[in-house]
Length: 103
Image (cartoon, rainbow, N blue to C red):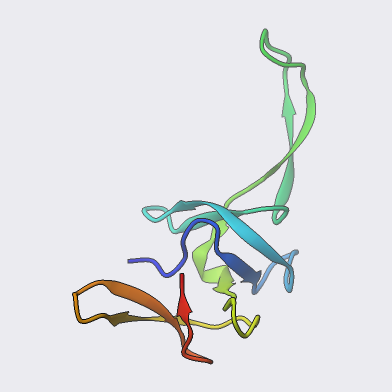
């Protein structure tokens, strides 16, 4: 089970966007990659089609999950998440720094 989910706030640990923060918009657990808003932006050169014009378009490229860190909503710092089980058997994510439940 991954500790990164869609709509999580994350911190970039390495690469050209190191230190930037963004929101996860797509997670691919089988490939171990995520797409984060306004992070790892690349230019795609496309030919014109019937649907849209050609040209140079900017889009976010996937980055490895190992290069991002979850940001705790309470302490607003990058932290690892651990999993705890509730009494009813549900798994929840908990911040290792402050102990707050991450929803």
